[in-house]
Amino acid sequence: MPWRRGYLFYGSPGTGKSGLIRVLASELGLDIATLDVGRATLTDDALREAMMSAPKRSLIAIEDMDAVFSQREAGDLRGGISFSGLLNAIDGVGAQEGRALVMTTNHLDRLDPALIRPGRADLHVEMGLIGAGTARRLFERFFPGEIALALAFERVIGQERLSPAVVQGWLLAHRDDPGVAARAEALAPVSVRVATAAE
Image 1 (cartoon, rainbow, N blue to C red):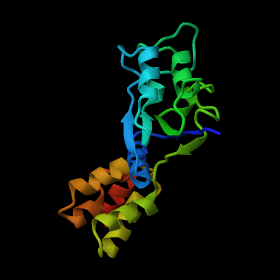
Image 2: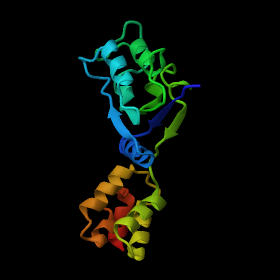
Image 3: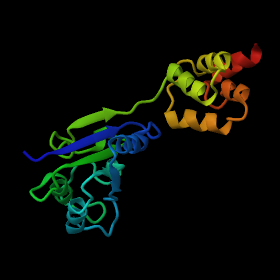
Image 4: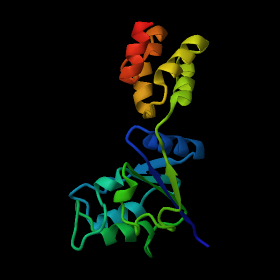
């Protein structure tokens, strides 16, 4: 029986969907073939050809699917491809066997159920915001051995839920000064910043 596998990574911007594609491809020793299905010049035939001609050991990535097709409307075309053309390219008669497809979206609720049903997207993976504990572990990776500062960073984050990209960006911006990084002024809620300043 020939096989195809489809994955859907969804969640807020900055939660690591694109990064997970790179890690997955690296771990499996696959090349990444990225398709921009929102390009206005792309036709149904060209999409089908691109899917069929992707290298054998590749992971086909279609990112930000919600920006291209949302809930289907009669005659609605975004870009140069039709909704049925996209579905046929993913799993129609001519679809390539022995390949993995990953789609990403920031808004799962905007995708048509026909696009993300089993057979097209067999596994749905939510990429969520992170809490203080995970933010502390990121701090520890940036600043090994700075346990007290890592715990202070965790306290400042408190109940906030942040995208991993925001936390990583903050830590990168202050990678030369763990003390400033631990204060996390731009990340902490206003009430925590006021309380910390008063101490």
